[in-house]
Length: 305
Ligand code: FDA
Image (tube, rainbow, N blue to C red):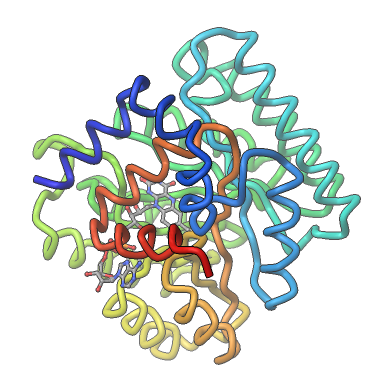
């Protein structure tokens, strides 16, 4: 029930404007979101890098509906990558990009061209780009654009969602040399026809996908906070004889920071997904939908220390 309340709240622009403008909400959000602008993202990225963590910076924003909006997003990513390089934060920091923000719904050729410009800037900055996964109607287009981008920028990362029934097949396609694949459970509400609905079925699919990626020739990026799946990933790495630099763990900023530190102290590569931007409200509501107990963390953030 709470899940649907938070998902509805995420889509309410009126509530969003109200909550986003309150300074107390901004303070509470700071644990999960770097802040509103690039300077905030650089500051948070520096702290994570100083703690020995990798970073993937995400500019929060809604799907674009005009070519002009998509161009603005492209230019912001190009500027962000320049700032990360100047600050000496590359290659520790890479960027995550949603193709819908680069105009995928308007024209996927345009989204490819804008993503290509971001990948070219990332390459100049000595780092790479990962294409976030969105709802299942975009998966074919996203994987086609990924394949095109990888011809010139082979380190461009894919994201595969274990809840989709097709994902085992996609893992097989992508478990090849040089390929970087982030495996996550999947954050979008999807119909039964294309996605497992039961949490246990999603976990089982995650493990089948993990087996394919860990036994393949690519570079698996295990994106979960789930202790059971983290333990299985560590086990599979041993099983398939992968050294610590041949895969990585990824978690969201502010989620299980003590587990991030534990994994890093154990010699694992850990990358933190660091979102920033004015549109932090919808992102926060989606995290609350996944895990309502996060409210207690928000509550603590509101109490002055
Ligand atoms: P889930 O939320 O199912 O929790 C499982 C268990 O883990 C819980 O029961 C609890 O025991 C433990 N746990 C979880 N969170 C905890 C916390 N904060 N504190 C303590 N214990 C906790 N999705 C998508 O569709 N496209 C994308 O591109 C991405 N990208 C992405 C990048 C990264 C780095 C991450 C970590 C995640 C994504 N996701 C995503 C989101 C992903 O699909 C998924 O919705 C969330 O990660 C939640 O699923 P989990 O696997 O973390 O466990």
